[in-house]
Length: 199
Image 1 (tube, helix red, strand yellow):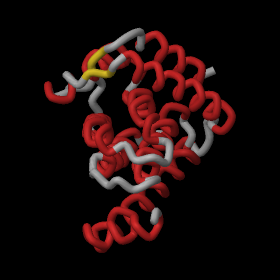
Image 2 (cartoon, one colour; image 1 turned 180 degrees about the horizontal axis):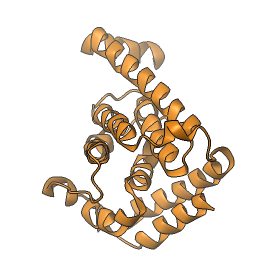
Image 3 (cartoon, helix red, strand yellow; image 1 turned 30 degrees about the vertical axis):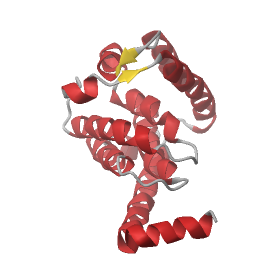
Image 4 (cartoon, one colour; image 1 turned 180 degrees about the vertical axis):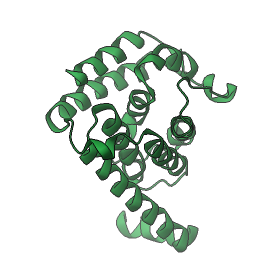
């Protein structure tokens, strides 16, 4: 199965502490989509990870830009390539990947393929999701709103699943609306919203 193949590729690539540059080098043959999913996994939960999102968000954005440009090999600037992922972090990511792909195996399948084959368009959507993920908004669910669309778009491309790709685009529109709302509220309004939701 394709999903099992993706998980085996991750497990073969990740065997200890490494930098983002080393991770990309080991996984480049598996495609940008799989790297996007792997990096987005920590953000598919409600708690904000501001410090991590400002590091990995630009990485996701760069992956998307290069996918949109039709590149086959990823080029990373030194300040991103040198970011180190410790063994504990990678172990947690692999555990999340196993759970994620167990779910993906149940819900994803080739369908609506015309929507899933636009890799460059998906790359643009992933780039925008990564850019939004980079913004330091310490609000619950803000990670999911940003990383979820990128994950759906990447999985849609990997599995040729146009329905998931369409859901990714819908999620991205909601994410843009969410961040536009925060921008309109401003810093003081955002803090007031935070206090109202979490007194």
